[in-house]
Length: 281
Length: 241
Image 1: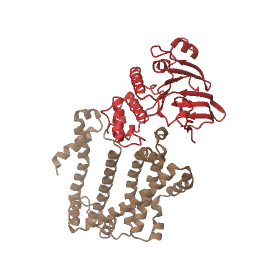
Image 2 (image 1 turned 60 degrees about the vertical axis):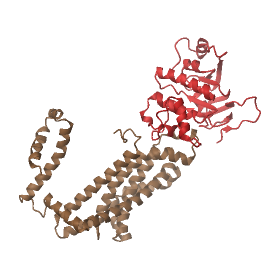
Image 3 (image 1 turned 120 degrees about the vertical axis):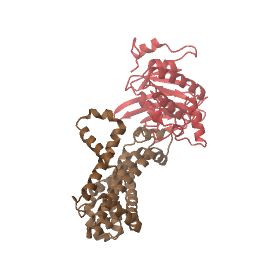
Image 4 (image 1 turned 180 degrees about the horizontal axis):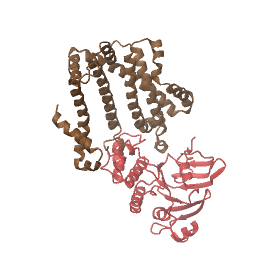
């Protein structure tokens, strides 16, 4: 794979680093090319070392081996099935956690009484690293779908809750006053001014929540799963199939990137008006 | 708290845009407005001058129904429209959505379009507030106030943040629109020349009450600037902050 093209670029990147004066000569596209060629070079180096036998396949398989394994597993249909199961768990957990976080966050954002009643308790629970609750969750719900979805929901609830509350609190009181002058009722005030004003903060919460959702899923699936990407990895561990393990890690990474891309697209669409998020960026 | 009370029927030959009697407004023990009475007719342009902290903005906020009052009576037929020093446009709504905010009417977009055309922004209906200059944003705020067809229009230093040339253009626009829609207007300002340029009547506020009043004799003459400055305690330079 383009070994001749990549190798000189790798050298150039190395010699370039200490003297930044060369950067303007390379231009924007040159620098962009280097930023992509450098990781490609690392992968190629990894492939070469694996083929030469410097790295044992039981420690780290060659990238090409991981790709052929991917194709084989995808062809048999098991990969897509496990991927689907994992995505479903994440989606269900996210939906539940985000709903709970949003409703609680909205209540606390609007009402001082709700804040007094809810906020301290939530902040106390938040102080617990939610993954530490896993043994307790397994005792409550056993090892199954409910336990995994619960753990994901737990991880998602707090970032959404905190950012919803914060977003509502940060809405400019002058705009709320204006809404009153224009004769908006309470519901209209919330719909036209408070929620749109809180949206940038809420979407930041969604992005954090997506990251914690994945973390929760990986941990939950690593313990006693009968299906899903995590199961695939643990099953492969039994047989020292490092190629499958690397594949699952890569899938987790790709899904993480995908989720972040979706969050970014949402921000672009919903915050088109915003000077830092909108199309102007 | 209901601040705006419908005026009693047949109280006068014409219903004023607003009538205030014996108004009292205090923050704790500090009395900001004391026994203030004021009447503004429809179509009348009143400017309110005074030093910072004399209670001008407090009076305006009380008339707008934004703050509770501690005594007296404010009689206004309907909720007034307000334009503030900041435009207060919703950054997430297009211009026409901003102008039609709170408009309880069918064809809100059409009415917003008419109002925006009046302020010279008829071709920017779907634009975002962030693409506007300060003067344009203030024009949209003016359109948003007038689209409600208010009987009382309250202006709280709406031109203070604009550059001098834009301010003069805004003066012309406001004069033209007020002549057309004929609301009663109360303009709070620091700028003596702005007050003279726009108002039929100038009130000078001091210590929570109206200290002086100057009325234009007729449409051809303007209010005597020297006399006004003398009463404000300034001899030469304009009192603009």
